Image (cartoon, rainbow, N blue to C red):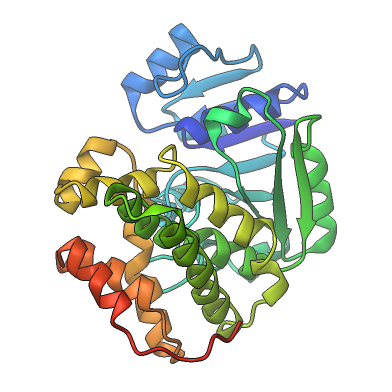
Length: 332
């Protein structure tokens, strides 16, 4: 297959190489000319040292080159960057092949999950061509060939099965899933909970605290997803609980590391600059809180994370605020 790939971050580099390992030709687009030159010259990503791009992978800043004659288009930009990139593509040519999204977030202002953004931009006729890949996966581990399981969800079940076959390797197992919106909400909302867990890690609050945050965080994710018409079992699967576990458990996660830096006295902008990459949870928490109010779903962890980032609530006061909430019977 000829595959166009949008985004040359660590995850984009990783998946592009995975796809190329199956004898596909992959052209990766980035808007960063210095990064494109480095990747073409050295074949090594600055965030994944020691891993060399395969011979079937090339890098370009010319989006036309990435789109030419493709059988599949894969996206790994950012949730904030998705709309402007596809608006640009729309002015260049019409897309007539399947699209696989891998960024995880909810668009600010519109409150749309990313598959909905693409449908809005490209039209209802493209809905059957859209898939969403998500699940517990770090580029640093996948590129080493460590066993990983994720899901791919599509509006069209047959497309989901085909995309599963395209991405599956002996070490990267991809399960088809029919609930694309549930998969998208799970992937987006877990990043918010990971920020809270990073704060707990930085404050030395122990494993019990993190376990509580993950469990109650999963409850928040499930409540909002169900209110938006998703299947609850999706949130208990790889795209929900699985992704939540891995993102909350390690400082490899940008979202968890962002929370950790907040706990060490860094202001949100300083923490973002130290990480040097997009922190999707900090972006998504704005829309998540708006949606929770629209559907009348209580999400206390999400609300506290929002206040720490956008109102700069002191982290210790945030922890105290959660612990002082009135106690109700646990409902799952």
